[in-house]
Length: 321
Length: 251
Image (cartoon, rainbow over all chains, first blue to last red; front, side):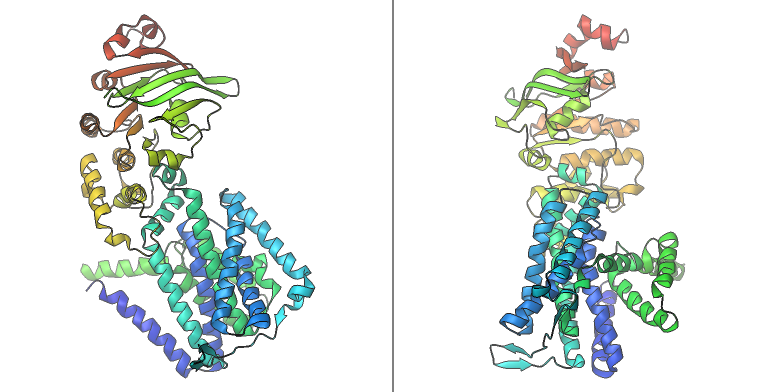
């Protein structure tokens, strides 16, 4: 019985997501796509922050690497979306490997500042190499061609409704992969590094290598999200690499709950929903978002998921009594 | 027994003007339960830090099983079989007791690079971890978060994490500090037993002279970075120089 409840819950969520794709209007579909993209970004990112305890301010750079990787590939080589996405992920992972190599030697504030510095460098490179990257205009005119498998089957993704299901597949795949990683011996070693990196070394863990590995993995997820957003908006923009964008998965993870698997997902839903709602009333949505974040950090350390788990635990106790 | 497992040559270490090891030559033999004693600031902890890699060696060499480990990173020394426990509690606080032990066991078995395996299905590792917990007497608390343990139990876990590496040379830095008498007796009995089994050679740093003299085969007295006395407990007890600087009239 213990195992059936989570399974039912997951099936229910998938059913709702499919239902949104089939029956809701364009706006709702667009918003849900946005939630899933941010969810992929934040899920991968939280392997680094929540799991391993490393705070990076530079993951926008990998998001942009995914976006521009797909963009260049699509504009110059082939507009096959899946190949483009794979290229984007590979570009992001490669960049993460290079930047990570220098960053994982340091921890805490030094690590955070190094990632910030590298992120800013990537941003200004994209901004200034106008001939190559299109500067502040970004890469434009990226097409959403049909997904073809060796020319035999062609699945169109032109409309947002069709594209929605491609995103949904990648979203579910990402969630599954991150879940597996967290529950693997590798994930346990990462948690050990978060809890006590010195003791981890005395448990035989080569801490730097694990940090680098998780840095590259989280960078690859950022790249996937970036590539998918580029397909959604049909352009790649330099602000994807900006530090303010790097902060988004941090805010989302904090909002939802750092230490839980579902935290970044719940946080993404809240983040997008709040932005939509608050923006209807006022232009400075960041001000009000700041207030909400303040309350969460000061009052509810476990984030939304932590609060829900607490409530659930209490009601279960009461049921038993 | 008798085979040299650790060979330290001309080890020197300075913290600014303070010398914590001066041209130290030291050999540890396998199977010989050795204790290092000395007044505060004698350089005991520094010596362990240098041997296990927590501090970089400034000059001198360290050989472990005839292999030069002087400049190896910590985890590589651990892989070779040199491990330690800490004077202060140094565990994985937010993880369960079982997970605390699983980390070294799975790492040493080379299984932590399995990105898609399930920790829950690591049966062999789990059995090994439970055996370690059985030994240190924490098996009933295996699903408790380490943070929630009493201080004495955390000390036991501290030693457990070090034992889980299954090292051939293990340094225990004041292992019984903060334990109640029952836990203390149990741990010392464990050390005696494991030492007899011969897989692990123990080197203890202790302040409690009763423990040192009853448990050890060999006692090394450090004072200001030099070895003041070295021999079996009886020799140390009767060593005049040692009595003057350290033991005083208490023995």
